[in-house]
Image (cartoon, rainbow, N blue to C red; front, side, top):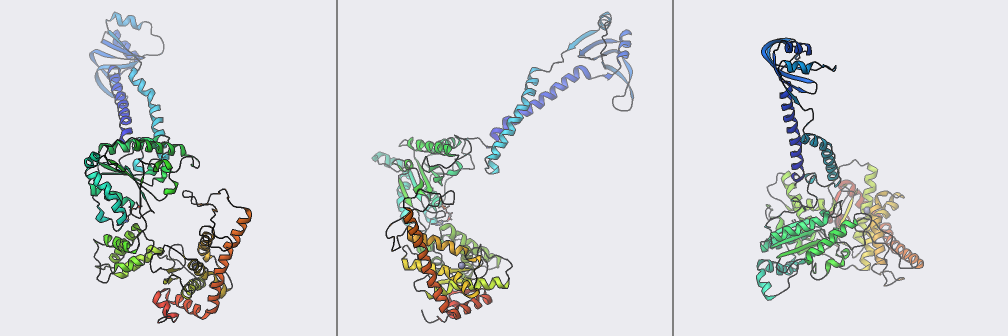
Length: 619
Ligand code: ADP
Ligand code: ZN
């Protein structure tokens, strides 16, 4: 796409250069192709009637001798004597009044050549700086757009070949999409329509033109849309809505127009717009700049969707994880009126996803994918794909011919807790971390109704110095208040253990505290779990999805209520902390055993923890 701008520019440059050369060439020919002689020599030869014709350009004169003469040419450094038939000379600034008369007397043929450059060349020379300025301006503007460097010099309003792939026939089918049976069922209708639109049009049935896929990132929304195109055997055009938004007002709208035109040309087709919320946020809610542009782009999108005639076999699919912020106009009938929820997979679907992604990987006989699937609650399809990939890399690095359960477990830890970090830790820091993690583990083990501890480690991973990993037995959708308070106790266990053992606190508990505060606030304000406040919900500033921080919102409750909420939140936290303190104080010996084992072994799995706590055959 860069060529569209550069081609004419390069041509203009080439033309200018060519003209200059040509001009210089002809100009030289007419004046310059002879031996340089002095003016007096010229006058002498004229007097000797040895000159047949001359041409005058400005104050330079060139011409032909009647007979060749010997001249000394020193223009190229050392003097050379040669025979010359032609000459050039420069007329002195002093007026030579007799020259014309002499020339006429000797019947010399005189031509005058203009000193003016040709109007075309001078016009081009005049334009040159402007062309340069505009060229530089282009580059700067393109650079400011901060797009991928490949797209640096594109047409402004084309959606561009890199952004979507016109004419791509998707090879993905529903078989490549594991699980999601509900979503597939709902989309089957679209597939049927695209396969045989005539049938639907004859009956006059209304087929949805816009389908909104709603779900968190990585759950396979793009994959699903691609699979619909693949099943129906139609063209798939995809673009991310954030690519519509540019610095210049109107560019996004142009891109939308262009995209829809391409889709109609290659109909039947599917347009897939990822991150629809980037343009589709409620109008009038824009923060700061860029909001006019977004609004125009959105309007264009709406009018394109309205402009579909029933015979356009184009389906628009869009993905978002924030359906709540979308403009209501987008969701009206005739637009994105069909919603398909793509949720995080449960463990059965996770197993199927693992199966899909291990199809081409040699798995060891010991591998039971269901175990990995159960141990990865909350992971999306993308996470699981990543997990399988990590396991394969690990197996390859260890020169193993198959991927074993060990590799998959290692990969799971890496994906769940981040990669191991090499860093220098002092003995004292190691002790503090060991007691901190032992605190979490002990509280988790001894409080009933908490998630089982899967693993605890003091090997630094990701941001954390140590990790206590709990895994629920199955996916949970409802949480009881008891469960949540216990969770707070577990999270506070690390801090309590540090305080009990060292009589001091460290900064290591920062993440724990953040999590505790957020959870406690939700319990009181969102889930109505406080006795004093009861079944009321409050907005205490919602995290803004695009700014990643809270915005001040108008408070809809009194100062008194605000005070009460604060009291209740701190009461919940206090309650959880007291529980953790009781457990730690009452089981100091067990805490020591766990911490010492951690310092020694660095990582303890669930079985080893049970062994250390003497819970082998209990529980
Ligand atoms: P989204 O568009 O929801 O952010 P993607 O469709 O880009 O997610 O998914 C990312 C990757 O995760 C896909 O390319 C696919 O390999 C994998 N994936 C996600 N869900 C599934 C699934 N249900 N079955 C198989 N693979 C999946
Ligand atoms: Zn902690």
